[in-house]
Image: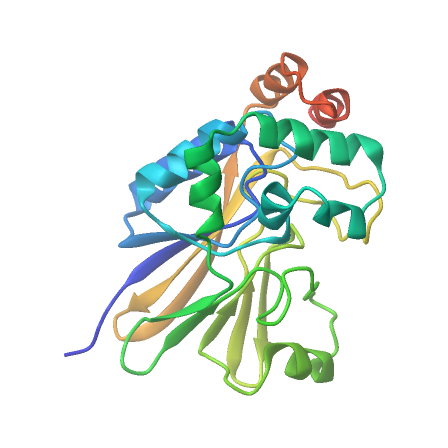
Length: 246
């Protein structure tokens, strides 16, 4: 008998509990068998502890994102960023977490696969199967995707990291990015200051009537609620975050 599953993929929550709660309400409305998180859960946002508590309550499997590693290893961020406000914000987020919450993050996986049916598998990672800092984009050359994704390709290969929703056909398979729950970008910023959109993003993958089905979803958020949460926080980058929702 075939295994049939419908899975919701969330990624790049970045401490935005308002967005995560809205996404989880939408997921429950649609009905899924499982939620999987593709990483970057609790840095740069105003509610890191609440986000981790929500994920723990879901008992969901989580992929280790680069920002999850920054929570666990304080010096790692300095190899990728020298912006003091970002470094201070990651340090603040870490200070909001208890030892049990950090232990939960430490158990995140580098990547894994899930069987959707006898014919289809879902391969999960953060940036790419080999690195959680790789950017896989709509215009990444096919030869580069071949190198980054490797030979063992699944029906759907899903990662986050770029904060950009993506569904792209590649060599007969789907390359999927569910986008960002907590800070969707209007466009790829490549290290520059991004424009953050006022909705939340996620994806669902499953089998429908015997066929593979992949869907991208956007959930509207209340800008004033996001702005107020940022303004009232002690997060070092709160002013910029509040301005994003002005």
